[in-house]
Amino acid sequence: MIVPLGASTFREGLRMGAEVFHALKSALKEAGHDTNVGDEGGFAPRLKTGDEALGFIMRAIENAGYRPGEDVALAIDPASTEFFRDGRYHLEGEGRALDADSMVRLYEDLCRRYPIVSIEDGMAEDDWAGWSALTRALGSHVQLVGDDIFVTNKERLLRGVAEGVANAILVKLNQIEP
Image 1 (tube, rainbow, N blue to C red):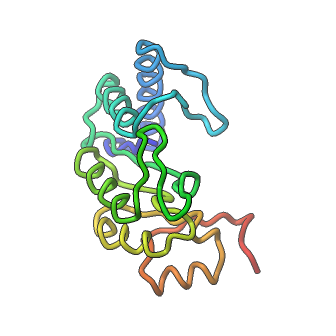
Image 2 (cartoon, rainbow, N blue to C red; image 1 turned 90 degrees about the horizontal axis):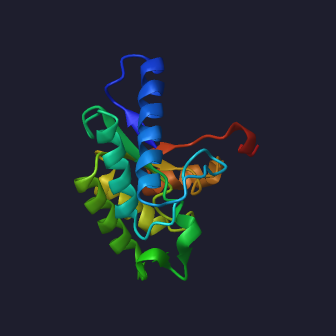
Image 3 (cartoon, rainbow, N blue to C red; image 1 turned 90 degrees about the vertical axis):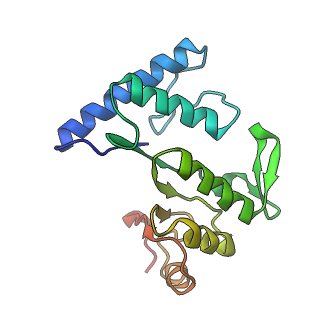
């Protein structure tokens, strides 16, 4: 997701987002990638690495006439639970599996190289130690959104507060447990 920093109105932010979206579609198409749109409205080309995906997005921002980090920033949702197995994060496209500390270092590196201002579900939903490490490493300057880890569950949220996990929560009203 792109975050329009240079927008003075909601409408201008929407326009900026649409321009980057179309520039991304053009860049993917020129590179021979599929440009079908998935259920949530995004592209799902078969790219090998997160770096490759972020590179396409950065070029799309520039091709739309904006400056990454000044006009537009990035918010990512890696959905880490989806590739967490046996205590490791399996980056299949890259042919490697990372422990929690290595995953945190990967996010630190990405945040140094790209204008990432928000990470949702950066660690797996049951990787409490990993979430704590991620929050210590990036929580002072990156929004770390706990979605899957909290699942709008009071006990999990209280545990997260006690353990210093994440610095933001995604509240889904239809999932709140009494």
